[in-house]
Length: 344
Ligand SMILES: Cc1cc2nc3c(=O)[nH]c(=O)nc-3n(C[C@H](O)[C@H](O)[C@H](O)COP(=O)(O)O)c2cc1C
Image (cartoon, rainbow, N blue to C red; front, side, top):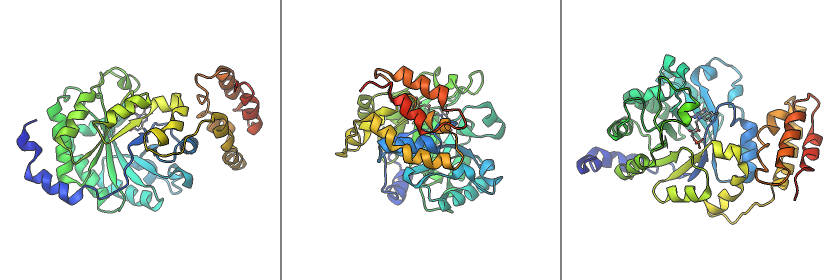
């Protein structure tokens, strides 16, 4: 991208006005995942990392506006800092939702501009919005105008044939020009809107981390966070040499104990957690409380089954939990018995 664009007056003007408005910033976050990162999952993660930014699953504007109880927005106070992710493309509806979300004391709001589901195409949501950068900016602005919490965007490096770096540059540039958005989470692969299922869209389009690095070079004043098949602490540290933050989804779900080292290795905290069994046991009071409110044990234990990955007895732990947590009467004793399989 040519140098002139990089340092244009407009960019500088926006830079001085809006950057660092929010001083809280998180170098590591856990990706929103529909049907996975629910409040039980987030509570469990929070026991292992106090510093990481957590996200809700995507909640659409219609889900919020068509419900009076806003059950989708319920969370536990221990989950902070927590971001509510919204799916929507109508600025007025998004603004209404943003106000409700702020009342619930969420720390940030994130707009989903990356989901490639066909349902999204119908309503111009998710990745489809990459075709309409001005509309995205209007959505962001509408929310910013009515709340005091940061509004961020999660998107991809491109869609279909609109996959050049120039397209990504223009997309980010337009949003920044017309809104105050200064945090972009970029899934480092494009979305293929026709022909690939959402699942394949998370595997098949090739990763391009360099694109994300280039974006940071061209917009050094924006907070750019990278996402996409990052798996180890070493990879996180490597990306952080170039970028402001790293977001991980699937690897954390498949191997949650990685979180026990995050506060120490990534956030520089002295707190080191080593005992996986102690983490599981520290969840008991929460589980007892949820069971007493009619929640089934498996709604919580399903997020814990990968906790002992790589440890002797983990397969038996998984099997015991999976086979015995669904029973309506299942309680803490199921976990206690499953823990007996773990060799310490
Ligand atoms: C089961 C599943 C559900 C997802 N749901 C969402 C979602 O609600 N909102 C969103 O922005 N991304 C969603 N994603 C995408 C993830 O947030 C993330 O961008 C993607 O998995 C790539 O990161 P990873 O390789 O670290 O998992 C989902 C991914 C998976 C696997």
